[in-house]
Image (cartoon, rainbow, N blue to C red; front, side, top):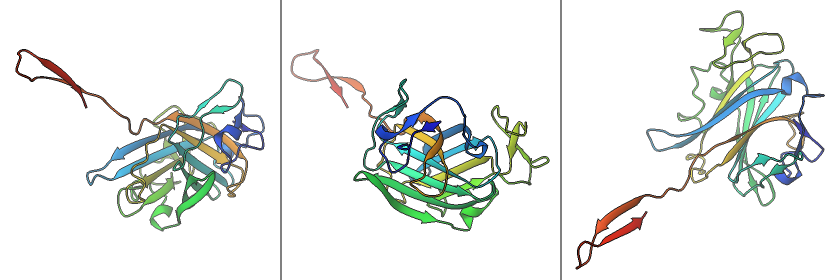
Length: 247
C-alpha cells in the first residue's frame, strides 16, 4: 500500500512511498488484482483497456490508472524507481456507493504536474452492463464501467470471477461494483504515439487529485518496443560477397 504524505498523483514518483500490509487501509480501497493491455483495432486505432477488482464495494471510492512511459518498479527500501515523463497518462474514475461509474477523466503529466486532457460523464459510460457498452473503440473516446447487480450469468448479485478471488463477505465472485473495466482510444485523443512501459492501478481517499493515495497494483506493459531484424544479401563484383543489413 502507499504510505507517506508525498504519495499523491500531482507528485513525481520519486516522492511516493510504499509498505507491506493493509493496516489502516479501507476495505473499499483494497485492490486485489489489476490488468492492462494495448490493442490496435481493425481501423488502426490504438486502444488501451484496463481493469481491476477490489475487496469490498461499500461506500464511495476513487480509482485511477497510471500509464508510465519510463519503467517504474518498487525498491526494497519502500521507495519507487523511475520518474514521470511528459505524456504519462492518468485515468481517474469515481464510484458512487459501489454502483455505476459517475465520471471518468483523462490527465497527462506535463511540465512537472497534472494537466487534464478531457473529462466525460456520457450516458454510454454510465451503463452498468459490461456487454452493452464497449469501453472504447466505438463512439466513446474513453469509458469506464462496473459489474451490475443483476443480469445474465449473475446469481444472487454475484458475477463469476475468471480468476481466483474472494471478497470481504466471502464471495468468490464480484458483488456489484467490485469489478471495474475501462477503455481509452489513444488515437482519437491524439495520444497514439505514446509507448508505455509500466502501469499502476491505484485508489485514493477522495475525488480530489491532491488526496493521498491508498493502494496500488504495479505491472509491466510492453505496449511498443523497438526491434531489429537481420537479412543477408550478395552484392558486389567479387562473388560470393555477403553483406548483413540491420533494419
